[in-house]
Amino acid sequence: MTFLKSALQGLLASLLLARAGQAMMPIEVVGKRFVQPSYHVEDDGEVFFIKGIDYQPGGSSAYSDDSKTDVLSDAEACLRDAFSIQQLGANTIRIYTINPAINHDQCMSIFDAAGIYVLVDVNSPLYNESLNRDDPDSSYNYWYMERVFKVIDAFKGYPNLLGFISGNEVINDGPSAKSVPKYLRAVQRDMKQYIANNADRKIPVGYSAADVVSLRAATWEYFNCNIDGDKDDISKADFFGLNSYEWCSGSSDWQSAAYGQVNSTFQDATIPVFFSEYGCNKNSPRTFDEVTDGVFGGLVDTLSGGLVYEYSEEAANYGLVDISSDGDLKMDDDFDNLKARYANASIPDISLQDVSDPAIITCNAKNITALDSSFGANFSLPEVPGGIPQLIQYGVNNSNIGKIVPLQGKATNYTIENSNGSSFSDVSISINPTYSISSLDTTATVSSSASSSSSSKSKGAAIVGAQPASYGTLFAAFTFGALALL
Image (tube, rainbow, N blue to C red; front, side):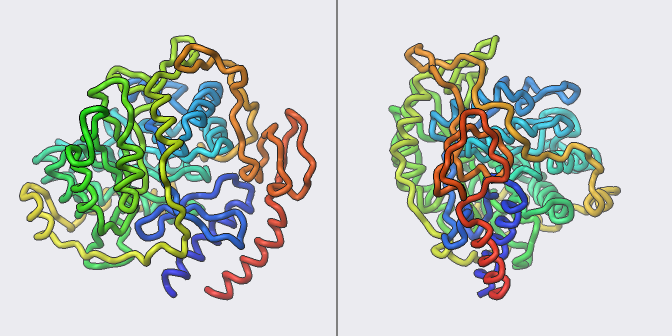
């Protein structure tokens, strides 16, 4: 009953957010699964699988904290990429580096309208904007955490924010495995406290682990357990991302990529696990057979999907699209191959009611060091740096609080070409009318099942406050019914 109560509370909170004028339903974590609540209260929420792409046009090296732009500040580019990502069949992107001082409303609203969730890393490569794996003690400081909190403020208001990534590959060798882990859990603790005090919903926080097989199991056990068996341990990760490049198109299979070992390592997960990066580029073009045969094949009961590395062609040659200096885009053969794999992925339909009650695994340092003797399985977490408790309680006074805004248009002015060189004649994003409960200029036809009116909107007409059929009645019924159960 406690689990059902918690799930109902989470669902009710999401419905309240939607009722307040949001668009996409915020993703929640229930046990080992991501769950997407339903707009219709008579329907159960369903398990959400990530069919994603890592997204950082220009690469992280292009980021500058004194620039007036970042990867989510150019609405025209975001319209171009949202259209392309929809063609790919992806539902999630991961952003590695953003500037929390820049407004991201237009881009996040575009991705929201297009039905695309966003994972945001809170760090950057610049000094005092990430944990230093060689010196975690001094880099875990007031200025770093202030920057992290500003990232939270900048994105906490977007319903399509799937979660925050506390660190990427910070643990990547023996020395970092010894010294860094407790600082990462401390950062997650502080982030979740800040979210609890300064956000309107519970936003998942997790870690993205390096592709170092020898450290994988120990790192996982460290982030998956509850200190002292405390079920409310807020330093524990809400999800675990794994960067994995073992399966290379044309030369690997389930056995040689050791996907069976991935299954056995994560089969007892108490939180969602997914590939935060995958897609080896040893052979070209990539055929992405690991998508249908692995991630959404033999791993589908263990993983919650994954994000292919990466969207645009950068120095490492992993791109699915080429973006010219003038902003026009051409899809590569890799794009076509991944699109076909995503279209043929067998993703199970799992209801919220079929998600098991999450287990509690008590942290055990001996079990972790037995997996890797170099791992610093220390659960005495660092004290919060001076000044941070005040920021957690009162906020960082950031004026840049993101929100969904009306779109200025659906179509990009950039040229988008298929891999064969032919241009798309219509480069308008497709907007699911279900998401049109916010004041978005959708120009999409609204079906009778998604609007209280069966008449369609003319091209260019704004849909202001449109709601699913009988939404108010259903919302009220659910509210009182849920509160009675609680």
